[in-house]
Length: 455
Ligand code: TYD
Ligand code: MG
Image 1 (cartoon, rainbow, N blue to C red):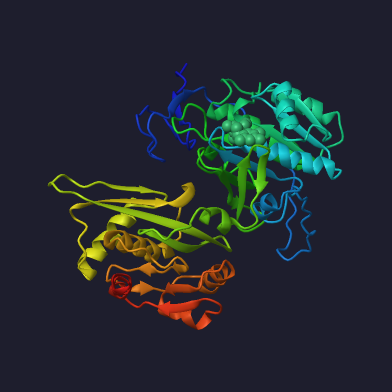
Image 2: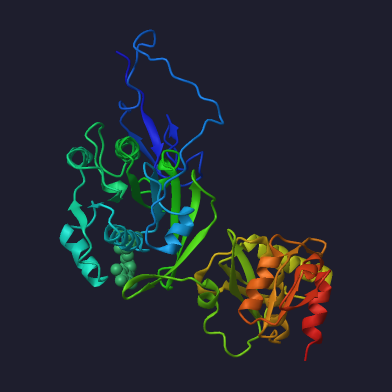
């Protein structure tokens, strides 16, 4: 008999190889390949010549039912979902351990239950008593949630089959679930996949909204949510720095709505509170004008968020190699911007340490941040504070031009709304400016002159 082939599966991305390697060839993660028993669940062989049924085709424009959505009771959660939970859909909620996934879902579950929806909350990580304690702390103890601590998918599905399908089932977390259809310990790729597969099938067949919690771990000790991304309808990620208060709920994939919408929450003693106006939160604490601080009107999805960018420049006396450290922005982009400032504007950063920080642990991906970063850097280098009521946005090219960016009008409106009287950006934005005083900057040297020339 032929020896069964060994197979190795990456716990971060789920890709398969037949040879062990230190680094996954697909996603580049280290030490994530583990040996797995051959899968049986998905490879059941069928005799294709008999037993199949003819499938019916439909035209693309056949009338379809409007999507029914159920509000989670948390407007920020609904916004990130694209309007609410869709019955019969599966949502994967990823995030670092301890970031607040269980708290968020318990709060949403309580709101749904209080609004008359039946909710089943299965915790595989905490005992029912622990969840109850948390609920008490959050002031949710009275909510009619059916709570259980369980990890066997068979037990869970048997129980669910004996009751009317609930509106929402929360599984916290999928990595603790165990399916007896397949070998392996909970948390391995094949277990996570098989458990999710069975739970999702139940949700689809019964019109139940299912939320699966998935921890993200950097060391790959448990299978990450990426192995499930293709199986679910919505992938959300709950992000933030544990040392900071705010949390951002982002949708990375959504079969029922737009992605890139965010919901913003603040973690407080009483659980997560919704932050309707994120700009106020990210800007809090700015009182005295300081050199090296610039405000950037960012766009998250369709939503403007004002964010403070801070730069610090430390001159080095000796010839030691200067450090460049970035938190919340791309370090390659900072290197590029420093090079452009040196080459096109004649500034000298070569013997200085450069530190850049996006306030509050926020991670910026909007390319329009270039101008605000440049303004912060020049202000820090010259030790001259920028006007406290100014915002800066625009993309900087290698030639030193300040390029137009998307959504100028929304950025300017948000800035004006929050009392910023002046805005600096690419030329084309000015025509659509109302409220704030707008100054068009064509080239990076214009920015430098403006900051150095200012008293
Ligand atoms: P949790 O929801 O358990 O995180 P996850 O499910 O993502 O692992 O949140 C845990 C953290 O949240 C914990 O470190 C304490 C903090 N927290 C608060 O600050 N306030 C609260 O009201 C609650 C319930 C938790
Ligand atoms: Mg948890």
